[in-house]
Each structure stands twice: as structure tokens, then as C-alpha cells.
Image (cartoon, rainbow, N blue to C red; front, side):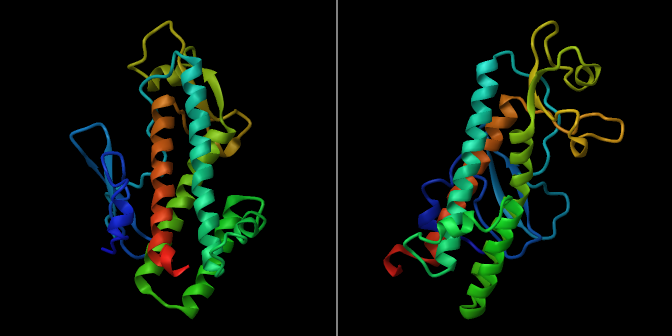
Length: 241
């Protein structure tokens, strides 16, 4: 395992933080360990096929929301949390370019119209950086962060391009949400029917998010943004900038 700077992590490796340690390589997966509270802790390990990634698609929810304000609040919070991730990535990009004053942050933002382009450009800059200043542990940790960002980008896109619907009368959702109370609203974020890639060959939706799933995504994204910040502090301590 390659531990990130413990001092930098101390502020947030707690009940609801899953980035407790890192190992090298893009192929890592996160292991979920149920704690005594409702939160999770996570570790990044290699080559263990039965572990799940925190960015993997969620199981279908057991029930939806009755409160419209609740689900819309967590849509907004989750999308805001993603922007914190990209903000930290932009700072990393600037540091990789040798600019600790953040002028290069906007270059990151202008390097691609979609996230896959931006993270690809960051990865290319990282290759050049580590060619000049090799460090296997740092390279491996960065690979793990990039893998996590790419995975969470898919969840972010589902939230951003989903729509809130009351699904209580849909037979598909009645079958999936057996714990849902009858004859009350069951609000979920679901893929619009025209989003072909988010439906199976029968036209059935591939995801549904209640405020529970949305709040989980939000907390995990905030943990990810803190993990990127901790990585930046380890590789480029403030006193050395």
C-alpha cells in the first residue's frame, strides 16, 4: 500500500471517508467495509475481483422520495460536489505544469469541452511531469485518483442528465421497489427514455436515484476532492511552492 500524507488526511479520514489508503496502479478497486455507523470506510487494493468500486452503478433503490424539495436539494448538492472535484483537478493540473499560482487552472478548463478530454490532458501533462521527476509511489497514487474520477464522472452525468419522475405507477419500479409504500409519490432521478445508452435492450431504465443514493454520491465526491487536495499537498508541500 502507498499511504498518502497522514497529516493531510487526518482532517477527513473519519466515519464517512472511504479514501483511507491507496495502492499503485490504475487497476485498483475499493473495498467496502461496513462500520458500526451507517458510514463506510474504503481502501484501494489491487487484483481483488470481489471488491466493489464506490463509483460503480448503484443497485436500484428500495423506495423513492415523497418530498420534492429533498430530492432536488441532493441533485444540486451532488452536482456541486463534482465541481469541487474538478476544481482540485484544475489545481493539480496547474501544479503539474509548474505553476503554483494557479494561472494554469483555466488552461485545464479550456483543454476540453467534456471531462474525458480534460482528464486525458491532465494525464498527459502528468506523464511529462513524472518523466522529468520520476516517483513511482506518486505516479501510482495519481493513477488511482484518475481512475476514481473517471468512474464518478459516469455517476455525475447520470444525475446531470436524469429527470425527476414519480414512478409509483410504473410496473418496473413497483417490482424493484418492494419496500415502497403504496399510493404515495415515489420520486426518483431516472434516465429520460430518449437516452438510449441508459436503457437496456427492452427499453428499461438502467438507474434510479432517490435522495439516499444522491447523498451518498455527494459525500463520496467530497471525499474524492479532499483526496486530490491531500495528494497535491504531499507532492507539492506549501513550503516548497
